[in-house]
Image (tube, rainbow, N blue to C red; front, side, top):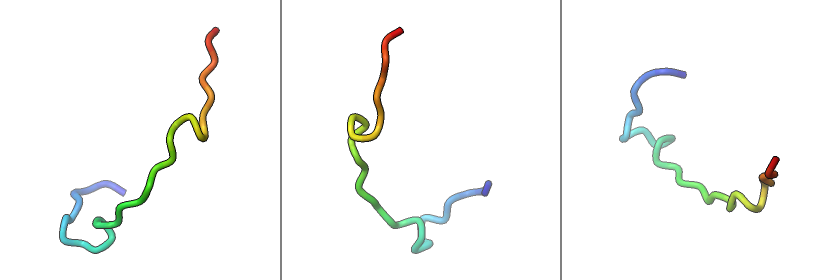
Amino acid sequence: SLGFADPNAVENSLVTERAPVAEFARFLDR
């Protein structure tokens, strides 16, 4: 959706862990 984030909304305060890129992606040289 488009619009402005409400910093006071509980759904905008969720912080999740992020997996390192190397864990889910592979980059190939051509």
